[in-house]
Structure formats: C-alpha cells, structure tokens
Image (cartoon, rainbow, N blue to C red; front, top):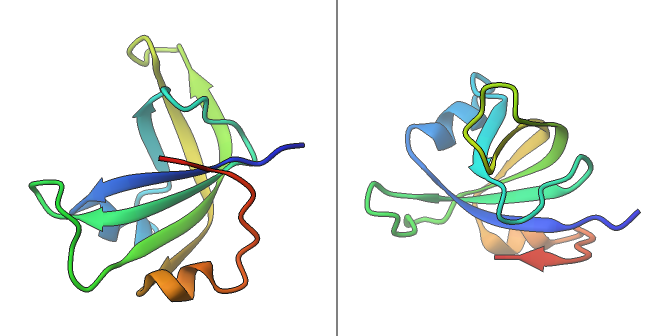
Length: 103
C-alpha cells in the first residue's frame, strides 16, 4: 500500500480545535484523492492564509473517508487519527518516515 502525505493549511480556530481533540474530522475539496491510511500535515495559518510565527503543525492519519451522502459534489470528509502537534518544522520531520508529499 502506498501512503501519500498531504500538506495542508489550516486556519484558526480550526487548528486549535484539532489539537485539543474537539474537532476530529476535516472536510476538503477532494483535489488530492485523500485515502484512508494517508497522512495529513496541517500547518497553522492566520485569517489571511499566511503562515503563523512561530510555526505550528499537526500530523495525523486519515481514517474513514466519506464522499457523497450530503456532502457537496467533489468534497470529502475524513476522520483524523493519531493527531500530534509539533511546534517546529524540524521536530515534525525528525524520525517521520515520509513517503510522498503533495502540496
């Protein structure tokens, strides 16, 4: 099985909600073919979609992927599993076996 790593931006307050566990899913345009077992790396951005300083990242596994069933066409919802927050780019990548990255 090939695992793809998807790098995404995530605005506040959604970033903190994922970190604290109150938001356990993500809804996105399915322009990357999100699949169960893939990895998402979400970087915090401000209201203007600019990267925040200091950098903050979330690394999570994609669980169940839902399409159709009331979602807008071309969109998916997926569960976020094994969520970890990283406070620097170096910490996030240290020891993380990344196979493929899509921006």
